[in-house]
Image (tube, rainbow, N blue to C red):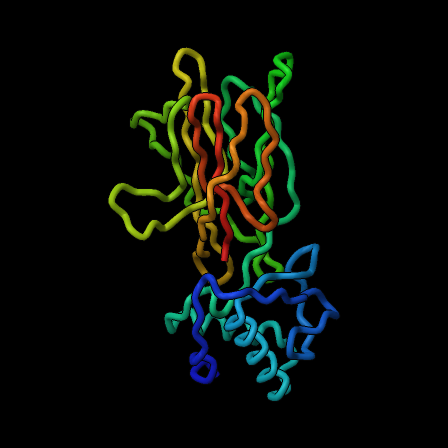
Length: 256
């Protein structure tokens, strides 16, 4: 089975296919029904991944397999062991269930709970409000929660923290590393008592198939430090942050 499917090849930048994968929804080019991935019932797939999925489901149906979704998952595991790229056999992970958390605006160490990842931030323009907010969301791949593993602080304890008035950092960046193996941002440590310093909490997203792939997108529009409300685009998470005086920017990206 895996050999027959291994002829499909594709790269990022190829047009995506939007496939309904909620229960009772027909797949593009195939009548097989699949289980849900998230509340909206849709998932973005590159054409090769859509073809791979449909081929696996069709084979399962021809063989009389009762659980076609389990058959597809096994096909994905086999293909990944053979060296296939994740975006050739899986769709983009879905980001859902956002929740907001209040923190002290001057001093806080915050990490998203329950395997959530940062997807937004809010700073009040009202000087009387002494709290900021972070938005954390859950990432799903094929209906299962993507876990946030190996949460680390950057810069590490003992190293000089970022100057919060002038810095830029994306999770996973290492000096001299090319290409960068990006991580996702799950929290932030900030204190302005005499120092105005910050650190990022970064994590590796891991699903039932192993370590997920994080794809960086462009820097966000400027946010005014005196007050803003920022949210990543649909199905994207925060990967990094930049501060230049009163100008704040975020980097968001996808998980595959």
